[in-house]
Image 1 (cartoon, rainbow, N blue to C red):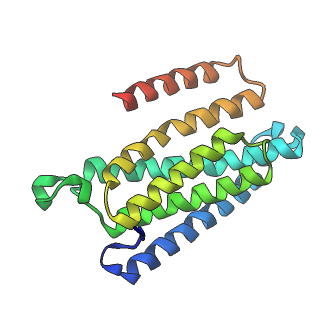
Image 2: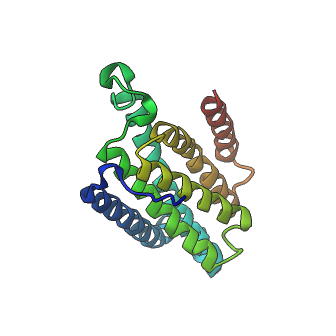
Length: 202
C-alpha cells in the first residue's frame, strides 16, 4: 500500500504558499544572521574578541531568537486570539482546522529548521551534536505531515509555542559568552527561563 502526501483537494495554490513561506523562512534566517553580525560589534565590544566559530554561533542564535519570537507570537494569536481552533465557531473537530495563514507560518518554521540544520551539519558538531540533528529532522517531519494532511495543526502550534523559552536560553548563552555569568541579568534571566517552562508545562 502506497501512501502519498498531498494537500487536501490537490490545491496547487496551497503548495505555492508552502514553497513561498519556506523560502521566506530561509531568507529571514540569512537576513537576521547578517544583521546580527553587523549590529553586534556596534553594541557589544566583546564580539570583536571572539573567534570565528563563536561569532558564527552568536549570529546563528540571532536568527534562532528571531524565529522563536515570531513563531511564539503567531502561536499565541492562532491558539488564543483568533477563532481558528474554536469548534463552536467552525462546527468541526479542532484537529481538522487549517488555514492559509497557519500553513504559511508552519512553512516559515520549516524554512528556519532547514537553514539551521544546514548550518549544524556544515559546522558539525560546533553548533550541536546528533541530538540537534534528530530534533530538527523530527520537527520538520511533524510539520510536513501536518501541512500536507491538513490535520493536527492545533497540536503543532502548541509545540511551537514552547519556542517562547528559546530567547531566554540564547540570552543565557550571550551573557555567559560575554563574561557576565555572575551578573544580576544572568540570574534574572535564569528565573524567567524557569518560570517560562513552568507556564508552558501547565
